[in-house]
Every structure is written in structure tokens, then in C-alpha cells.
Length: 399
Image 1: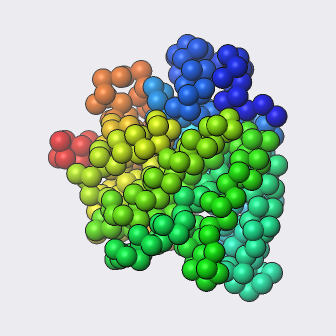
Image 2 (image 1 turned 180 degrees about the horizontal axis):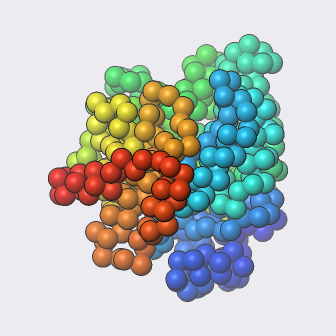
């Protein structure tokens, strides 16, 4: 199967590139050149049949992702499909299925089948569940267990996958030598780290990266290179472990591009406000302009219950400084699961951050807000909580 990047390098403008060009009010040739260079990714698995293609990257509107998914505590699929619909109506550009319980495979297939926006997954979550059921512990995972799930999710139509390929022995040495307050807070990062320490072996996603590329090339899955050592508190931000992993991600980005596989790079979580711009520019340089997908960043550790606000503050500066894709952070990120009304609040906050960033860059064509969002909120009976006022207040406060 020829990937979007391979077509672009052959000089071919695909129908997906044409669609993205119309959506962005840009020329198809601009999109083709960006995809060829790797600075734009069009996440569109060949098996996601009802997808409206979306471009992520340089020169495009900053995109917003919403997370949904089943768990052991909430295994029913119907509420997640409701959240999917609510998120799409609210205007998100992407959904990630982070299911960790119930029938994970059935949930993923139903979500992809019902979604016309791109869908991302984190295969290690399902691997962990299956490994515990099979062996009793995540650390007993085999390479085959991991790669079988990656292939299955690619076959199911996942448009992009978060894969923690950048963690290797050098990263763990940097982590243990310097030390951290919060150690490893990424769920996927902790699974990989724990497996490496228990087995004394290299990360299979790093060691066998070429096999990852084989799968992603076959289905045109965009690799979202996960930041498994992202900081979990602002005191740990921009430490040696985070930067060593970023250096590895820069290397892996180039290897993927050599194969014609599209890449996004994921970025840090908790970070002091004055370090955000530096981190955005560092990622862009180390990873040669690959699209940057950012969680937050959250600019303080002391606002539980207001994580959607602290992430929107960080997301505003991140977008101004070069981030291409923001993952929403829920109102109660650290405290509870999210329901449909809270999903609206969280998504809105990040969209306001994106809009503010676009206005700051004087590129009003990239502003992604419209009055329908307010009408939608009124129709679902959700109190707006004056989020717009908060964002505007914080924006002027920090500037």
C-alpha cells in the first residue's frame, strides 16, 4: 500500500490532500509539499472508510483531540459513542480511544466505524490488559503480544497510534541518574519502563522499530511517537530523561520518513509557563519540523478540578510557539472519569486556547470558533461556567 507521504514524494496530489487543502483554504500543492517533507501529516488509515481527512502540521489550523474509552469501572460502549458524537458536534478534529476495560476490540471497531474524524489509539493499553489476563503481570509481556495488538489495531482502521518507541536504556539511565519527584507518570511509559527494568532488556518498540514501520506502512498509520517520560510536575520539566527521549524521537522520525511513514511527535505534560516556548522550538528543531502533539501543557500542579483551565493556558502559548495539535485535558483529569457535559467544558477550553493562539499570530483564517458551539452547549443544557471569560482573563493576565 502506498502511503500519503510516498504519493506526495512522487508528485501525486491525492484526494485526501485535495480535501485537506479545501478545508484549510490552501493550495493542494502546499499540502503535498508539506506531506512530502513530513511537516504535515494526514492521518488516514486505508481501512477507515468514512473518514473526512484532516491535516496536522505547519501552516495549518491547530487541531484539538478529545479522549474517550471504556474501562473496568465503566465498560459499556453506548456512553462512549455518546461522547464521540458530542465531541464531533462540539468541533473536535480527532478522537482517541483509550479503552482499558470491557470489550476493548469491539469498542475500538465501533468507535472507528461511527467516527468521521481521525481516531487514534494507544496499543500498549490493550496489550497490558491482555497480558495481565494471560500471564498475571504486564512485565510478562512478549514482543509478539505487543506487535500482534499493533497489527490488529492497524487492521481495524486506527489512523494514528501512540507508540512509546523513544524509551531506551539511555533514557532510563538519565532518569535514574538525575532522579525525579514524579518519576514516570505516562501510563504507557510506565508499562514499557517497568517491563525493561524487570526483564533487563531493551524496549522492543525501539529495538524492533523497523517492524513497527512495516505495519504502519502497510495500512498508512501515522506513528504518534509517545513521550513516555513526559514530566508529571513542573519541577521535573525539561530534565535529562525528557530531553534524551526527545533526541531518540528525532532519530526515529527520520527513520520513519525514510520509509515513507508519517509521524507526529508527542510533547510534555506539566511545565512552567516560561519553559513552554523553548520546548516547542526544541522539539521542532530536533524532530525536523514534524507535527507536534501536545498534552496541555499544564502550567501548575496545584489546580485539581481546573485542569481544563491550566491546560488551556499552556496550550495557548504552545500553539503560538509552534504546537500543531492539542490534546484536551478534562476538568477532573487527575480525579475522576469524564462525562459528556465535562467533555464539552474541556474541549471548549482547549478550543479557546487554539483560537487565542491564532489571533495572536494575526492569522484570523486559522481561528476555529463559531457561534454554533454556544448554541450546542445551550441545547444540551450544560452550564457554560463562563469558560470564555476565564480564558480571556488568563490570556491577558499572563501577557
